Image 1: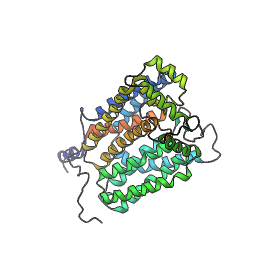
Image 2: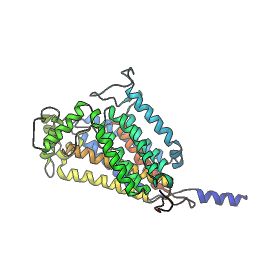
Image 3: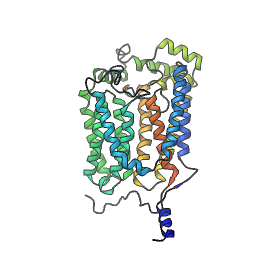
Image 4: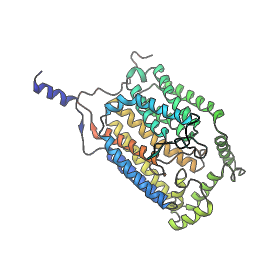
Length: 393
């Protein structure tokens, strides 16, 4: 082959980088959410807010670094990362691990101390799961046959069960929306999705007996609250009751920073800088603050979906759908539990809640989306998915 022919072939198979793309929408939304969170955290914990900003800058640097990693590298490493993440989740539950390595917090074994940072393996698993699922579903015979969909469900179950045992019900709940969205994006048959949905509901119901007493108590407290029963407000339902009281105090435009500090001290909202940060936002900036926050997540979601639509290659397209769904689902669950519409599960608000590993992983997800949106498909890229029923069982 001549030199001209080889160079022409390289150009055909090489993806091009574009300067203007939907990844900038994702980045701007993530940046504004992080700054929103830093200011909200400063309401009660200025030192934590400074640390959050520092970790956010690190996260942004890592995000731009990972954006330039070729997608084929993620695909090649997807199952290795999945297995490694499973191992780390198992490591958390091994009896006898020294306390300085795995230190329980509030009865939960979720963090591994790596010396320079405490990392939650469940955060790593979120990315690993999306990569592994995208790698599995990128072939037509996987997403159009019921057998392939059942295998996809069994890829989701092990991490969900291990995360649930930590216990971390909130994070475990995130895998199903991401799985279903990726199946829909892949072109799975709707009757198969209905069956998968029913199996997922059955699986979720079967998890109730293995929930910890405090998790069951929070579900009971939510049911009692809906029924107008306040008997749990000074016990297991205290956090939820305080959050809703403070949200109501914010009304339409909020009470401002100084008054918010006073009300938070008087009402003692547990984890106000972390899981309950949405209550702080609505207290300080009111309904318009909550609406602004939700609008930024909608902007993030739009950027993620446009990034998915803009590429034909099935792997990055599915990754974009999975990441977008997981971030938006996490926001919905967090705000729902703060508003008293879902049981409190200890789930953070992406980019906003205080936390090292959760913030860094959220930025890495944004960086992956940025990288997907940044690249044009090579000329020889095949169409991502086919919706023809021909030859399918």
